[in-house]
Length: 257
Image 1 (cartoon, rainbow, N blue to C red):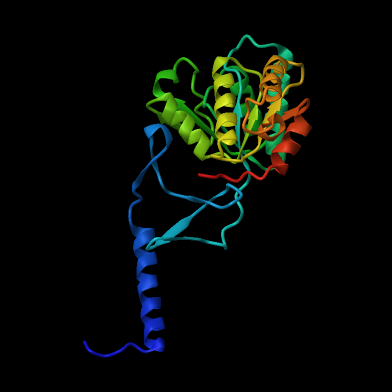
Image 2: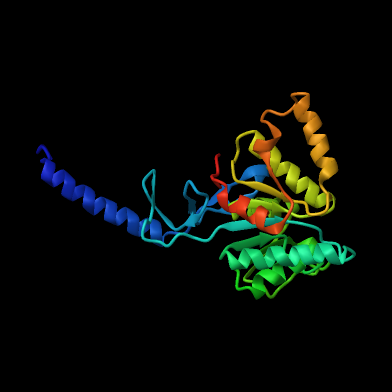
């Protein structure tokens, strides 16, 4: 066109283009984003440095996060036993955790089951008014008797997808006594933290010494310089519910990718 654009014209044109891009970004469908372990997940939210979900709009290569949205409550992922044969004391511990999460206004993410400590914790959180999200694979819906009366129940095809979604929706991790699955989930989150994939708080609640053997094993690894970070930087060890919840609330909860 042969004419040079003045500064005023350029600013006006940029404003028009930005407005159009925001409208298209908000109105357009979200694209699938490949996640860890080859999972596919919907990229519908962005995460602030504190790990909280906030609605976002894309402008070209830039992601704009609305500062007018209220801060989301801390979302705590709870790993624990799905066995119905656990002791009364452990059930009481799980109930206190669910109640404590609700009293602090936090949300809970867990494996979606209605049985064992999973079900006890979820029901107590719901009773206290907390938002509870369950994530469960189709294959385990019957085995773990999915708890349908929760805020959100997400069914996945595989265990890998389940773990990825629980990870994506969590700002912190709380581990109660549990079996092989709980142990595996704890070790994975510690390994990822050690490698720098996240630095969200990991808190192990151990009221009766259940996790003491694992603690001794990790200390032996630490003593022999097999850990990339000192053990105390990978997790927090708590002996009662209040101490565990305090540790979760004091953690940075920032996700690094």
